Image (cartoon, rainbow, N blue to C red):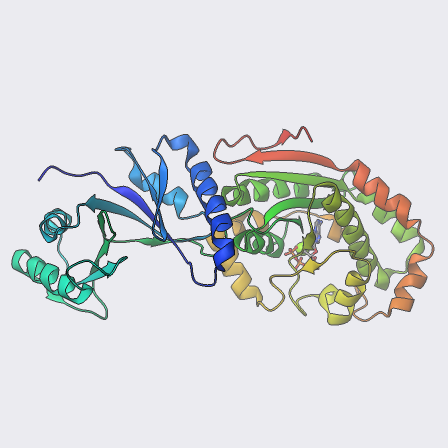
Amino acid sequence: MARIRPLLLVHYHELGLKRGNRPLFLRHLARNLRRATADLGRGPLRQVSGRLLLDLEGHPDAAAIQDRARRVCGVASVALAYRVVSTVEAMKAVIASLVEGRSFASFRITARRAFKTYPMSSVELNRELGAFVLERVTTRVDLRNPELEIHVEVMPAETFVYVDPVSGPGGLPVGASGTVAALLSGGIDSPVAAWRMMKRGCRVLFVHFHSAPYLPATSQAKARALVGVLTQWQYDSKLALVPFGEIQREVVLTVPPPARVVVYRRLMVRIAEALARKHGALALTTGESLGQVASQTLSNIARIDDVAGMPILRPLIGMDKLEITEEARRLGTFEISIEPDADCCTLFVPKHPATRMTEHEVAAVEAGLEIPRLVAAGCDGASVEAFEFPTGDAGEPATA
Ligand code: ATP
Ligand code: MG
């Protein structure tokens, strides 16, 4: 049999998708799949009952395209699949070429029919194709824990046969849920929080507060590197770099040490919110996890929320540091986050920050600050940089 060329078969979870949302979901998913593979020279994308198919047109590096596609949010799994006509003979021919020269102690056939009028049931297909494999290879059937699983998906006009699908992130395609502004420090948590929001379909605007010239510019370099990594999931990003050192210096003049962390955070939120509005974002997101550090007690979180005019989403609130760290490693942000730097949180930060402050107490210590002027200074002083993936033009100044 002439070797046939694989296509990329993309599955997404339809479960939980409301009927009316499905076309929007698919439009975003298809656009992101095209975008993620744009530079690799593949063929067109089409839709077949609950799946997307990307024509690889004989691309020499199918695995590279699969690797890009598996990162697209909304994708449940991706496989290099062989397309044949829906006859048992054609299915056998492709299975023969898939198992040829391969040794596996056990296997199973997993046949599925996307339409029920096909003359054979999936059980009958499993039996017939399984018997065919047993004739050719010394192996055994194991339905529970097979070493090789051969998938056969019968569609009305064609059948797809594949092995070794790889899982994607699941979730929703970036762009389907609107935009959020993520407060991105150089730490481990906030990049993971931003990614979690992408996975729920959000486009993320990154906002980083730095203390140059009071501290070296390393925190900005880390923020850029982190945004560079995270842009792999949303294809283009903007990073707003906000000068915060001068603002902190003013806070230090009038606010007693224990209250400073909460006051800094409230100023960050006000500035981030102003930037969010400017860029069309509807919510903020942070890497806070309940009780992890002094600023993340319930009452401090309440004091931070007091000044926010839009929701602050905290996707890591119930996660342990260990779980967050594992996710950061998977994403490839961990190595960047652990590089030593002095971010603005290390500048003018008290040894013993207050863990409990009332609304009244915070208002009293903030009375000596000209909040609107400080917020305007942060917002107007922000410089915005643009990032792109796959082209990798990191760090170019944005036009907006
Ligand atoms: P992270 O690991 O994300 O730095 P953290 O455990 O260090 O978090 P905090 O320092 O209390 O916790 O920061 C809480 C959140 O506030 C961060 O997750 C981030 O969203 C935001 N944040 C803190 N510092 C900055 C900064 N310099 N620029 C932007 N956002 C910041
Ligand atoms: Mg931090």
